[in-house]
Length: 294
Image (cartoon, rainbow, N blue to C red; front, side):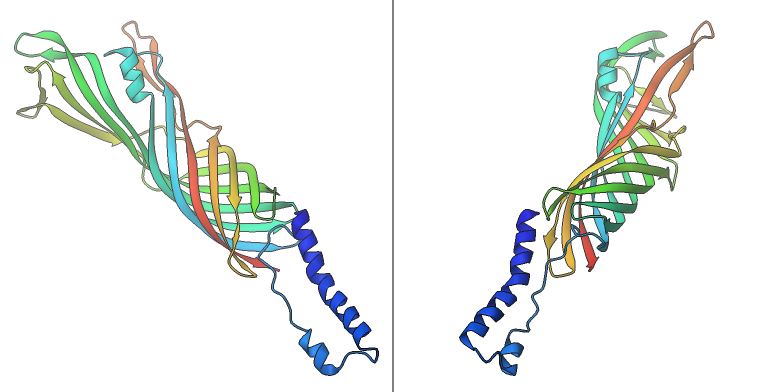
């Protein structure tokens, strides 16, 4: 910022220095022609680092979703492998946001962001010791299966009010609360199970015996409104006096849970917690195009 201030001072002072020097060379003063020659106006770069400067823009990019949940009780299968496959997942999504930025001072500003983001997350892996019923022998048989699960149609409207702090005229950091509102279709949870071993075990699907089955349905219990914190860093590339291209890297840490937990009834009628503490956070990378009203 000091460099920018010194640069601006030099630009402002330069004409006065040149004019004063010209008066020394011409004791009778400047002619009309000499004044006209010195009357050019230098264009300044787009800057959000000045107080009272408004900026409007649009940003779009990709998001990486990070899902996690706690699985305290595993009823069927190797518990450690089960948690490794279903305890976490990740996936890609996209987002778009409108931006209103206002400079309070040279280094501090406020930024309002209104956006829409969507995405999914998934995971897969092998799970041993999953018990299945073998109809021919009327016995339970331990199987090894590959589970491939995913959750899709996860979409939110987002509202953020961030504080912007400029480390340099180009580099800035923002942080503030974010509100997410679930929109669109209900998220869908699907899982594909493939029996790896033993060879004589199959799934019964209608009248067919198959090695692979896929089941899907609505992911009920999603939280409609969530509150969190958005932290981001951005760097401004000036395109002209009023336009700038601004790449941004941000992380949304959501305090509110993604969805309700899941329970089952035990043999004695007691409630068994199967899943809890479901969380979904997002890392975003995008590029914004901003117009500055000087």
